[in-house]
Amino acid sequence: MDILPLLCIVSAAFTGLTKGAGVLPDVLNAAVGETVMFTTTLTPPEKPFLSVGWTFGEKNIITFSGLNVTAPEYEGRITLFMSTASLELRNVALHDSGEYSVIIFPLGEEFKTGNTRLNVYEPVSSVMATASSTDLVEFNSSVHLSCSSSGSSLSFLWLNGSSEVTASDRVQLTDGGTILTILDVTRYDQGPFRCHVSNPVSDGTSDPITFSISYGPENVILTISPSREYHAEGSNIDLMCSADSKPAAQFKWLLNGVLLSDTGPQFKLMNIQMSHSGNYSCQAFNSKTLRYESSPPAIISVLKRLSGASVTSSTNVPIEGNSVNLTCDAAGYVFTRKWMKDGSDLILSDNIILYDKNRVLSFKSLTKKDSGEYSCTVSNPLSSDEAKYSMEVNYGPENVQITGPSEIHLTETFTLTCSAESRPPATYTWMLNGIKIHNSAVFTKDNIQHSDSGIYTCEAMNDVTGRKLSADHELSVTGAPLFRGQV
Ligand SMILES: *[C@@H]1O[C@H](CO)[C@@H](O)[C@H](O)[C@H]1NC(C)=O
Ligand SMILES: *[C@@H]1O[C@H](CO)[C@@H](O)[C@H](O)[C@H]1NC(C)=O
Ligand SMILES: *[C@@H]1O[C@H](CO)[C@@H](O)[C@H](O)[C@H]1NC(C)=O
Ligand SMILES: *[C@@H]1O[C@H](CO)[C@@H](O)[C@H](O)[C@H]1NC(C)=O
Ligand SMILES: *[C@@H]1O[C@H](CO)[C@@H](O)[C@H](O)[C@H]1NC(C)=O
Image 1 (cartoon, rainbow, N blue to C red):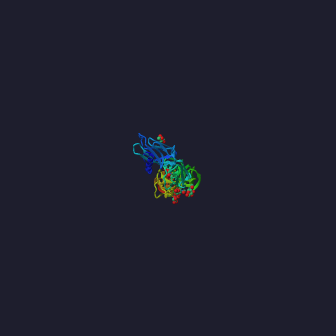
Image 2: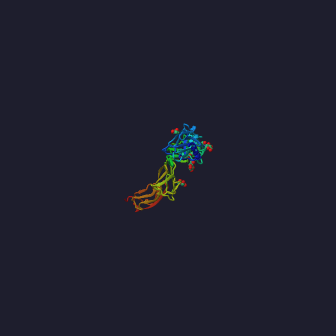
Image 3: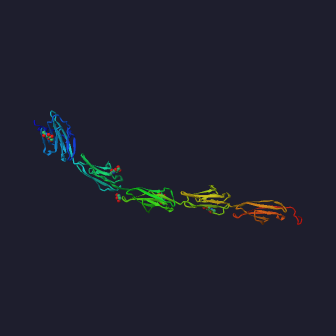
C-alpha cells in the first residue's frame, strides 16, 4: 500500500486542531535566525517508523515513508531525526510562525500525532529612552520619557531605580507603555529611570536617565552661637543659616525686617553693641526655582555688664527726723536691685519705703536706729555690682544732765560736769544767772564765794543739727563770810 495518500488523509483530519497536543509541546518560541527543534516525546522504537509527516499549516514540510520528500522551500533548512521523528528547522524567519503538526506511523502500533505553535520573534535591540528635559524644577515641571526599540511583539515597562513604575495621579503610562509622563515632579523623582523592553525571546534595557531636580529652599534655620538669652556688649556672635535647597541656596540677612548688606550662610557680629539688639532672620534664595524662604526670627539682646554701682544720698548730713533718699545707680541695664543693711535683708516699714523699682530707698523721718551700713546690689543676667553707703544719723542734743554738788562751803572748790546725748558730740556753754562763764563740759571753781551761788545753766549745742538744749543746776554757798585778816 502506498502510504502517502493515507498520510494526507490522516493529516487533513487533524490539522484543524489549533491547540498543541499529542507528542509535541504546546508552544515554541524562537528568535529570527535561530534553529528550532520540534522534539517529540517519543522514545526511539526498536524498529524504525513506517512513516512520518510534518506539516506547517496545510503545507507539507517533509514526509518520510521509505524515502524523504522535502518541500523545496525547506530544502537545506531542516533535518528529520528518524529515531524520534523530531524535526529541526534552521534559520527561522517571522513567516515561519504558525501551526506545525506531525503524524507518525510506528510499526504495528497506532499512529501518533502532535501539533504545536511556533512563534518567531524579531529580538529586542537598540532600546533607547529619551527625556523631554532632564533639568527640572520641583512642583513646576512635567516631563515625558519615551522609549524606542527594535524587535517584534514588544512589551514596555519603566524602571525607577530597581522598581517598576506604576501609573498614578501624576504618573501616566501611554502609547502602550512607551511614554512615561511625570507631572509636577518632586525631588524624589530623580531616577535613574530605565526602559525595559521584552518579548518572549529576548529583552533589553535602555541606558539610565537621571534628572536634576531643583527644589527649595525650605526648612530655613537660623542658628545663633553662643546660644543665650543675653549677649554681653563687646562679645562676638556667629549666626549660621541653613536650608534644604538644590542647588544650594544663597543667603541674605535681615535685622527687624530690613535687609542688611551681608550675604552668605555665615554672618558674624563682632564686638556687639546694644544697638545690635533686634530680630535677626535669614532669607534663602534658590536661583533655579526662583523661590525665597525666610527663617523664623531669632532675637538677639545685647546687654552691658553692670559697673560703677553707687549709692548717693539726698543729703550729706542725715539728721534725725528729716527725710532722706538713698539712690542706687549703675552703668548698664539693671534688672534687679536689692538693698541690705548691715549685711541683713532690709526690713521695710511705714517709714522706710522703696520707690522707682527699688532704685530709691526713702526714709520719711530718720531715727538713730537707721544708722548703719547700707548696700545696694544691682544685677542683670550677665553681671552684678554692689555699692555701699554708711549713714550716721545726727541727733541731739538731748537728755542734758549736770552732775555736781548743790551746796558747798565757802572757800571750797567745786566741779560741775555737763553731759548730753548728741551726734556729733555737743559743745557746752555754762552760764551763771544768765551770764556766760565757761565754754566746755566741765566747769571748776576754787575758793568759792557767796557770789558763786545761783543758777548754773549748761547749754548743749549740736552744730550739725543746729539744736540747743539746756539744763539748770542751783548751787548755794554756805558759811559765814570770812573777813580779811582773819585767816
Ligand atoms: C531522510 O532524511 C534524513 C535527514 O533529513 C536522513 O537522516 C535520513 O537518512 C533520510 N532517509 C532516507 C531514506 O533517505
Ligand atoms: C521613584 O522612586 C522614588 C523612590 O522610591 C519615589 O519616591 C518616586 O515617587 C518615584 N517616582 C516615580 C515617578 O515613580
Ligand atoms: C521681634 O519679634 C517678636 C516676635 O517675633 C516681636 O514681639 C518683637 O516686637 C520684635 N522686635 C522687633 C524689634 O522687631
Ligand atoms: C513655575 O511655574 C509658574 C507658573 O506655573 C511660573 O510662573 C514660574 O516662573 C515657574 N518657575 C520656574 C522656576 O520655572
Ligand atoms: C525721695 O524720693 C521720693 C520719691 O521719688 C520723693 O517723693 C521725695 O520727695 C524724695 N525725698 C527727698 C528728701 O529727696
